[in-house]
Length: 232
Image (cartoon, rainbow, N blue to C red; front, side):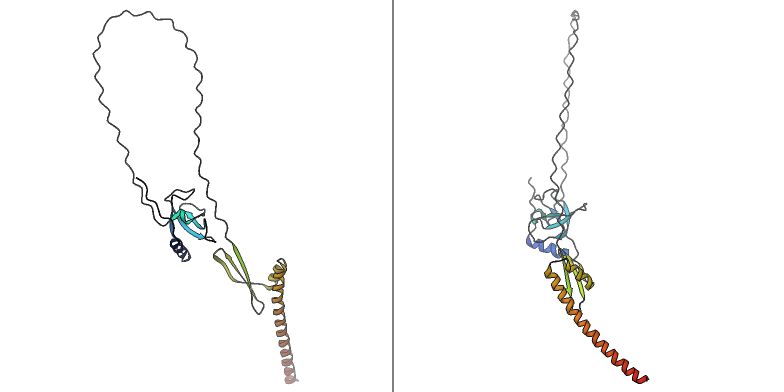
């Protein structure tokens, strides 16, 4: 009896798996007969999606393994396979009753003289049987390629800097403070356009802070003179 063909993942199924993963609930999927390198009907957990959504862009972790593998929607399904029914082994046929031996008539015959025995020729040693060829195992699936990393530097009008780091679709660092001096040093190792843009922001921040220092210095001097007049 032919096995029922499992439906592969539809675009709606892929959207559902994405929503479950973003909600922190990795959904279970099963491998179809189109999956290469794994047994059909085996289960796995969805752990990530790579971009662009083409080819083997669904990353899963098969049950009982630590490696993450990439598959296409045609190799996965949301339908849990039915458990296999065990077929009882066929019963061995009952042995037929042995026929009764026919009666043997005893007739006296003279014993013949034994013929001279010739030594039997030596038998050649049997050749060793060829070793059975081992079945070729399918090539293991390649591990998923590392996701792209995006680093974003952001400055404020006061000259403060923060950094954001995103790996694939996951943000691993958000608005972490960075010293302006470290940003200036890193910019000098990058293309000139980056260095010029960073230097323009730093120069504007220096001018604002210098003007603020001059203002505070003038206010401090005026306050000192007023204090001297009150205590003179």
